[in-house]
Length: 90
Image 1 (cartoon, rainbow, N blue to C red):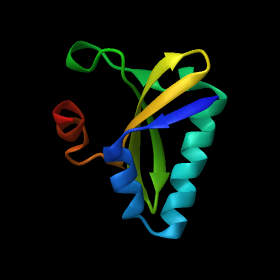
Image 2 (image 1 turned 45 degrees about the vertical axis):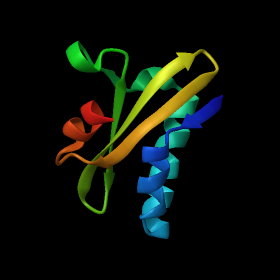
Image 3 (image 1 turned 120 degrees about the vertical axis):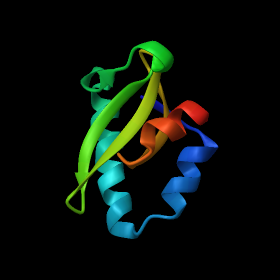
Image 4 (image 1 turned 90 degrees about the vertical axis):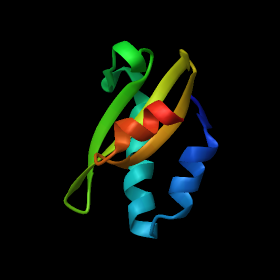
């Protein structure tokens, strides 16, 4: 599975602590194994899927788009607070 990332995703990852990066890596691995596990959005966010996971007793979301059967583009990762606003913006 080919994993593509956006600059926004990379910027967020650089700010995380090593243990937080491990949690994101597990989520990315989970998505790369089966991209259909995320919840597909409708309306303004059509074509984007969201995978929810826990990090430090807080719910985090990982937004991605399935490009093809062999590639996924990671768009944004972060806590639920203001997540969808950021996703619509960028």
